[in-house]
Image 1 (cartoon, helix red, strand yellow):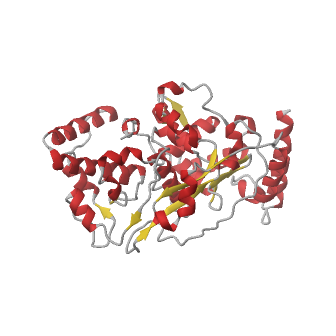
Image 2: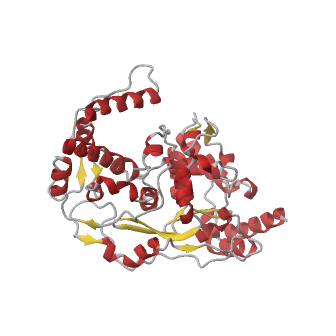
Image 3: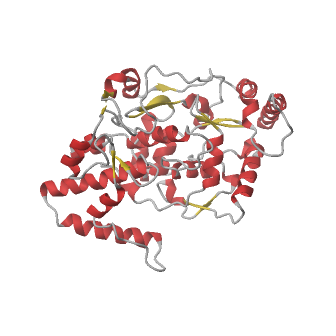
Length: 410
């Protein structure tokens, strides 16, 4: 089904400070992060290289329902939390797979712990046949998809994707990696005061480790390992969280342009990563990402430099939706909606693999000036800044920063 590389990933300690710093710099209008040197956006190439999840294939979409009681009872043999809920209990799912009471043993490493969980689960699955085996496999998949790929806060596990698991032979045809990114974009759009991310946060951490290594937030632990999440671990910081927040804000304001790794994957041995080769037709393209009621644009044109191109001036996006979206977290009572019809234009865009990003610019200068004028008042988030209520000083600093980096590029 294509989940193998993803399920072999080791645990990554959450870098709460880094995630919070990224949330502060997210521009929800264009689903991109704003830094002094320009836009930065996690792309489908980042997803497939970091997680190993498929980013090509069918969009994860379909019909959402007022109640998931019938499919949950029929396919999982479980009860939902409330007649009109799309959530099931994580503990109940784990118990059904024989791993509810598993705990870390003294001096047991994460790898040994996961291996023991797998053995326990296999022992349960090996006793099942036919429909019972299919039921347990769906329970396992909904746990992986609903808690990791489309993670929710707290204990409950979402089961919007359950109808897609009815035919187990087709599960591997869906672009689960693209869905992960759509859900993550949506989760990052919550208030910056709310710490944490409901989506798969390790993607963001490793993305920063690869693109901004001079921050020193990650440490390479296994060179050459793939997917890339296997290569990194969080560099523990003993300073207080408040002090770390201050330092990382100041660091993001002062990282030299030359320290940004726009093309960190050059030289990678793609022959050992078949998931990368399959996803390549979707790299370098503006495209709509789908996760049922979450449909968000991936503006790859904002980061043409990640394709080895000069960044051209583009029309900065504004938040415009041609459809009404239900509740952001998809909890509570919802309308029955067929998203293949509701967002047909965006779904057709996915089927066409979006639009290729090209650039005829011979330098980044025009983009840098336009970016500084548009975002100068927003990009400087550090503490060592003069009072600048109208953003004039920051805008001038942005223009100066852009001019200096252009000189350095010559």
